[in-house]
Length: 264
Image 1: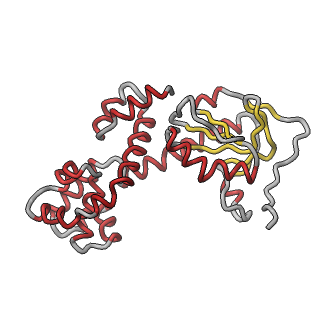
Image 2: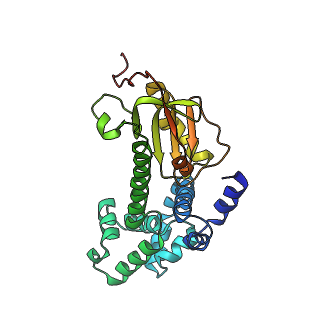
Image 3: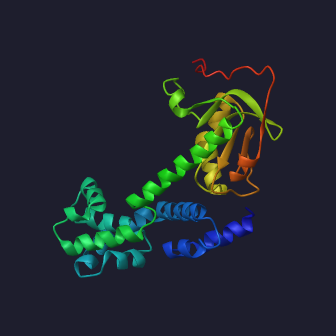
C-alpha cells in the first residue's frame, strides 16, 4: 500500500464506527488491525496521564456520569476507563476482568449494564476483540502453512522448535533454504498485523533481526497489508498476502538448516 493511502485511512480511524464505515471500501481485517494498532499506541502514550485522573473519574461516575460518557470525555477506550474507575473504587484487577467477562457477577444491575455497554463499544480490549486477534493469527499461520505445503517446502514450527534452547523462533523454520524472488531465505514469519513503519521497526528489533543472527535471511508476511516502501534490515524481506501467488525455488544440494544452539 502506498503511504499516502495508508495515512488517509489511519487518520480516518478515530472510532469503532469509522471501522464499520470504511469496511465497504477496505478489507475488514486490515481496518480492525490498523484501528487496534492506532488505539494501543495512543493508550501507551496517555495511559499514566489518564490513570492519574482515576480519582476524579470515580467521583464523576458516582455522581451519575456513565462509563461511556467518561470514555468519550477522556478519549480513552471504554474498558480501560472502567478499569481505572473500578480499581480506584477498591476492586482488584482480577475481579475487574472477571466482571468484564461476566457482568452478571456484579451486584448492581445498573453497573452491570454499564459494563456490558463498555464491552460492546470496545473493539480493542474486549474479550471478543481478543478472540478476533487470535483468529487473525491462526488464519495467517494457516495461509503460510498452505503456501509452503503446496510447494513441497518442509519446515519446523515454533512448537517443533520448543526445547532447542533458542529464545526466539520464527513461525516456520525451513528444513532447507529456498530462493524467494532471487533471495535465499531460511525462515518465514507470519504477521496478522498491518506492516506500517512503527510495527515493522518494532517487529524487526524484537524478532526479525534476531532471527537473521540465529538462522540467516528470512521473509515476513503481513497478511492484512503493509507499506510498499518499508526500509528492511539486511537479510529481512517483506511481502503481503500477494505472496500466495508467488513461488519459491528449491536449491539443489542445499544443506539442512541447523537448529543446534550457538556455542556459549
